[in-house]
Image (tube, rainbow, N blue to C red; front, side, top):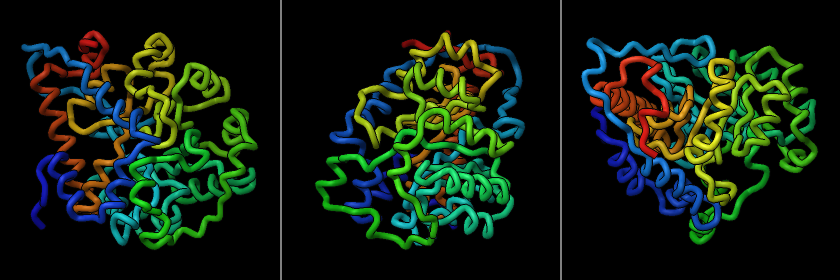
Length: 345
């Protein structure tokens, strides 16, 4: 099947025409008037990369890893819920794209398919299981057991989305995502449980499993410190795509503000970041700011809407090509070249 798009920009334009207006608004909208969601994009755009020519001879010598797994590219698919409103098979098509392209991706308890259903179909994918703490400890333990049984490579705990936010673009279309696409997921959850927990939950979860545990939603120095004190194996810096809290703080802005902390934990804890990536050069910017892994969400849904698993693979291939092309043209030959001195801020 011929690829229907050759850039992420074209993929977005195609999916906008292909799906109903309300679904597009739901996907693109951020909290309230999109201020923080837009900042994820605009703050990333303001940062410039300083090229370095004649920076050694030969091919790139990168050694990217997700914990102990070697990976070709330093980016993964972010967790995204309610995917059958975009494609009838939803998460299953994302999983198929992951399998065919050997991509690391994330699935969530807020998805339309359970982890069991996804892994039953695609057994050998490298997947992160994200748990929203929407149940008691016994419920959370069941989700951890599911992750272990299905050979998850890590568990992510979502901290930044306790309740449905007011998204003006979403609400003004009178669109309710729950009314579109089939929900095959039989996981029963209750968001009210979220308010029973504090940071000690992380320590309790660490005692339940040997899998790496990564809290997602770190956007303050206090939360960063709490995550480390309670045994986090990694830090996932994220404002949930600006979709839940209109704080006015972009992820790249926060990452810049914790450069001293990053130097202390670099090579000890994996640092994952998401927010606003729309081109290969954006990945370089995050790496230079100290991120190890960049999680990308909306663009992979553009691919899903366009052509299912083939679209997912195409988004991955485009980002990979752009990333390595920019590394070559900007003079990035080894991991050490990704550092903050290569940025103009």
